[in-house]
Amino acid sequence: MFNTRILIVDDMSSMRGVIKMFLTEGGFHNLTEASNGQTALSLLKTQKFDLVICDWDMPGMTGLELLEQMKKEENLMKIPFIMLTATSRQEKVQKAIELGVNDYISKPFQPQRLLGKLVKIINITGTAQK
Image 1 (tube, one colour):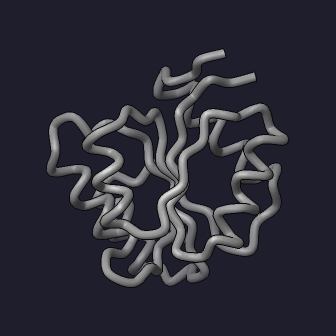
Image 2: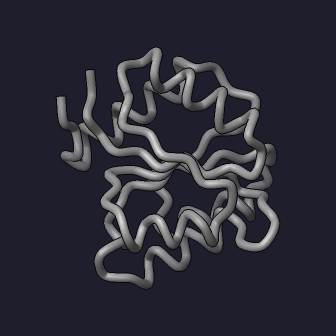
Image 3: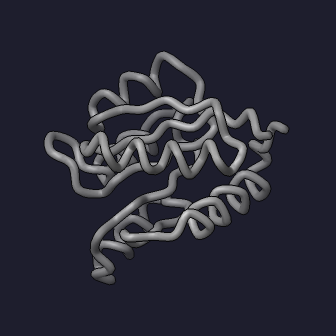
């Protein structure tokens, strides 16, 4: 079991629920949800998280805009960030890479793919807490 604190950001509650289920089955239980980028940013400023899993396309503040805001803040810039996207357009992916995204996953995805990337990032960044 991992004690990694993960923030799941998606405007669709059903997608947050699916991600939460995948993560729980994978041994992650310290999970918080946000329905948009603005709420996520507020949570990031008031609570400690070890990793963010975020949808790209959301109203108000996109996942890319959230990532951009996080990279501007000293205490948030090093938090690993996985982007979920329904698009694989190279220019969008390139922009996320330029901003420092740790990884991205195209929707739809298999639970093992998400868990594999998550564990890899946690191990690389040293945020693993078993």
